[in-house]
Length: 237
Ligand code: PEP
Image (cartoon, rainbow, N blue to C red; front, side):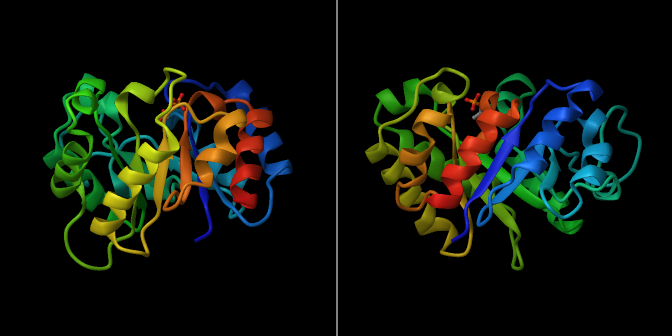
């Protein structure tokens, strides 16, 4: 399956950073899909600049479409702004905004309703891994978070909480075991991304692990040079 390399900019990026996007667009490798998930303030502009060359997406979405929900942005609005995808259930939102599996599923279903690819994030804490419960934790999250019904356009991002932003990554064997467990649930057509401290030096090894169909990249997606190196690893994998 063609790999997807997705860059989550989190709460980083001002209009002056549009040069990074332009540098990414200028250096995109062939044979790989590349996406960028900037803050909402940049989304519409990035979508216009990227056109069809790169996927531009949002980092979150409301579970509903319209209404009295101050501060929320719906899937309808994201699609209207040019988004083609959205990250749902990132571990930071699960931890700091208290998002439950039920909320994540509602968001993924809202995204699907508007034709957006939902990237559903799951992952265990370090304590859960140390207790031998990593796979069981992720399987339970998937059971609660994945959109229901047919015609589902979603991807899964396996992001161990302890690897996000920490500079630590699981062993290839651990990634392999988890991705195989996820594959057994989502089937062969759904992309399973790995996320958590993917950097230029480790990208090729991670992307070579069976059932790793791409990467969700945080810190290393902010600068075009680093991100393009990871994208190039995706095109070769
Ligand atoms: C992320 O934000 O999803 C992420 C994986 O971050 P980092 O690559 O910085 O660990």
